Each structure stands twice: as C-alpha cells, then as structure tokens.
Image 1 (cartoon, chains in turn blue, green):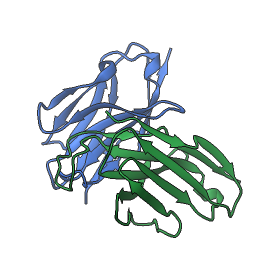
Image 2: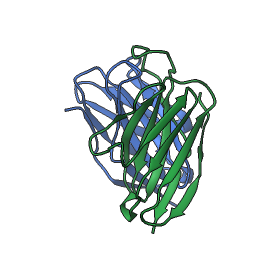
Image 3: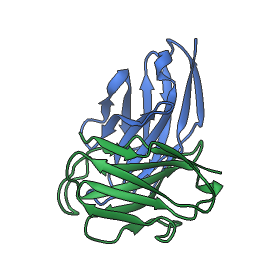
Length: 115
Length: 122
C-alpha cells in the first residue's frame, strides 16, 4: 500500500537549535515528495519538493530535506529554529506521474519552539 | 502559481442544514480537488472534480452527502448536506500546479490550496 508516515506528532525545540521532522514513505513508484507548512489559521504553503532530481532539496525559510531511497525517508531539517517556525508540518507523497495521480498527506507534526 | 479563493471563509450552521462552499481559481485547470481537515487532523481527500464529468469520490465519501459541481475550468462547489456536528471541519479546495491538459500531463508540480472554509455545525 502507498502511504506516508510522520514519526512524531509533536516536536519541541529551543530557538536557535536544529530541527528534525521525520517522514517515511511507502510507494511502488518513484515518488514525488513534498513538505507543506500550515501556520495557525492560515493556508497550506509549500516548503519544498523532491521530484527525482537532486536528492538534497532546499526550500524556503532555511528548510531542507534529503531523499534517501534506501531508507525510504524524506526528513525535514533546519539548522537553527526560529520562533516563526512554530506550525504544523505535513509530509506529502504523490502517487504516479499524471495530473490525475493522488496525493497522500501524512498525519502531521506540530513544531513548537521554546524561547 | 495559482491563486485560489473560497467562500465563505467560515460559517456556523445548524444540524440538518446544508452549506455550499465555492472555490474560484485564477486560471483554467483540468482537475480540482476537495479536502477535509477535521480538528487536529491531517487532510483527507474527499473527491476529485473534472469539468464536464461526474466527480470521483474517495472511499468513505458519497455524492449524496457531498455533491460537487464543476461548471467550468475555473470554478467548483462542494455542498455539505444534512450536516451534523461530525462535519465540523476545514474544507479546502486544491488544484494541481502543472495545470496541464489531460490525465498524462506531468505531475511533478505542487498542489496549490485555497485558504479553506472553517465549518462549525451546532
């Protein structure tokens, strides 16, 4: 079955320390993978995406993610957390290659930043 | 990128009534998607709406409960019928970033999401 698993429902880090949000996927295809962020009472915003190009993907706001096929992982990292990073983060996998292919959302990880 | 607007942004409704949510995109798109995000939960796909054909519903969602219209390439509506408190959610409209024509257009682009409609059913 195709799926995406976010291993932590909640992550709390201190401001200025590294962030790691974990995501594992299961797909029969070579997947397209995305990270989205949802700030309170705001819409979803794309952070970054992997679509079979470079395995290390850089996104907005200093975030990056590395696609590791051997580990079926696409973890999101940031070297130094900022208070404005507090939000809900979703790992998303796209199944297939056409515009009709479905996307599946992970369960989400709530990131809290301690002053 | 695609700019998506939704109306209403939020509503409080009584049990047993229906609400129609509108989604407008600033460009023509082949497919539009409707999602539900229940409180504290992730997004779940309700259905995919193609212009000129019946919407395709995901498991657990039926047309009688969530009728969808897609009259043209820039607009869609989702109706939540005979509402109950369990329908309290955020409903989001989404389009594919590729916006190519046909099912075999490339799919590497992101999905764009509307701001959502926050529905509370009393």
